[in-house]
Image (cartoon, rainbow, N blue to C red; front, side, top):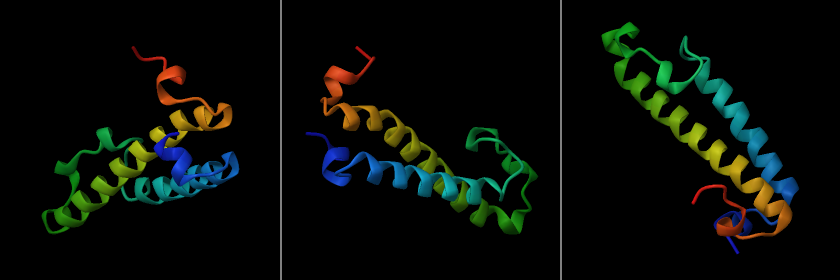
Length: 90
Protein backbone atom coordinates (compact mmCIF):
# COMPACT_ATOMS: atom_id res chain seq x y z
CA UNK A 1 0.00 0.00 0.00
CA UNK A 2 2.39 2.72 1.16
CA UNK A 3 6.00 2.94 2.20
CA UNK A 4 4.91 3.23 5.83
CA UNK A 5 2.80 0.10 5.53
CA UNK A 6 5.82 -1.81 4.26
CA UNK A 7 8.03 -0.34 6.99
CA UNK A 8 5.53 -0.62 9.85
CA UNK A 9 3.06 -3.44 9.74
CA UNK A 10 0.95 -2.27 12.66
CA UNK A 11 -0.18 0.91 14.33
CA UNK A 12 1.71 -0.20 17.46
CA UNK A 13 4.97 -0.35 15.49
CA UNK A 14 4.53 3.16 14.10
CA UNK A 15 3.61 4.41 17.60
CA UNK A 16 6.80 2.88 18.99
CA UNK A 17 8.80 4.53 16.21
CA UNK A 18 7.20 7.90 16.95
CA UNK A 19 8.13 7.54 20.61
CA UNK A 20 11.73 6.67 19.71
CA UNK A 21 12.00 9.62 17.31
CA UNK A 22 10.54 11.96 19.97
CA UNK A 23 13.20 10.81 22.43
CA UNK A 24 15.91 11.39 19.84
CA UNK A 25 14.44 14.81 19.00
CA UNK A 26 14.59 15.79 22.68
CA UNK A 27 18.22 14.67 22.91
CA UNK A 28 19.18 16.73 19.88
CA UNK A 29 17.15 19.76 20.98
CA UNK A 30 18.93 19.74 24.34
CA UNK A 31 22.15 20.66 22.52
CA UNK A 32 20.69 24.02 21.48
CA UNK A 33 18.88 26.85 23.20
CA UNK A 34 16.04 26.75 20.70
CA UNK A 35 12.60 25.19 20.47
CA UNK A 36 12.95 24.11 16.83
CA UNK A 37 15.77 23.60 14.35
CA UNK A 38 14.68 26.76 12.50
CA UNK A 39 15.16 28.79 15.68
CA UNK A 40 18.82 27.80 16.08
CA UNK A 41 21.24 30.72 15.80
CA UNK A 42 24.57 29.31 14.69
CA UNK A 43 26.32 32.63 15.24
CA UNK A 44 25.96 31.85 18.96
CA UNK A 45 28.04 28.69 18.53
CA UNK A 46 31.79 28.80 19.19
CA UNK A 47 33.85 28.55 16.00
CA UNK A 48 35.53 25.32 17.14
CA UNK A 49 32.11 23.73 17.72
CA UNK A 50 30.52 24.67 14.40
CA UNK A 51 31.05 21.33 12.64
CA UNK A 52 29.46 19.43 15.51
CA UNK A 53 26.63 21.97 15.68
CA UNK A 54 25.94 21.65 11.93
CA UNK A 55 25.94 17.87 12.24
CA UNK A 56 23.57 17.87 15.22
CA UNK A 57 21.32 20.44 13.58
CA UNK A 58 21.11 18.34 10.40
CA UNK A 59 20.19 15.29 12.46
CA UNK A 60 17.59 17.29 14.38
CA UNK A 61 16.02 18.49 11.12
CA UNK A 62 15.94 14.94 9.76
CA UNK A 63 14.34 13.59 12.93
CA UNK A 64 11.76 16.40 12.88
CA UNK A 65 10.89 15.65 9.23
CA UNK A 66 10.59 11.95 9.98
CA UNK A 67 8.28 12.65 12.93
CA UNK A 68 6.05 14.69 10.62
CA UNK A 69 5.96 11.84 8.10
CA UNK A 70 5.09 9.32 10.80
CA UNK A 71 2.38 11.52 12.32
CA UNK A 72 0.85 12.10 8.88
CA UNK A 73 1.06 8.42 7.98
CA UNK A 74 -0.32 6.97 11.19
CA UNK A 75 -4.00 7.75 10.44
CA UNK A 76 -3.59 6.24 6.95
CA UNK A 77 -2.08 3.12 8.46
CA UNK A 78 -4.94 2.92 10.97
CA UNK A 79 -7.58 3.25 8.29
CA UNK A 80 -5.73 1.23 5.68
CA UNK A 81 -6.29 3.94 3.06
CA UNK A 82 -3.85 5.11 0.43
CA UNK A 83 -2.03 8.47 0.70
CA UNK A 84 -4.10 10.04 -2.07
CA UNK A 85 -7.44 9.26 -0.47
CA UNK A 86 -6.36 10.27 3.04
CA UNK A 87 -4.44 13.42 2.17
CA UNK A 88 -5.94 16.83 2.75
CA UNK A 89 -3.63 18.29 0.10
CA UNK A 90 -4.80 18.62 -3.50
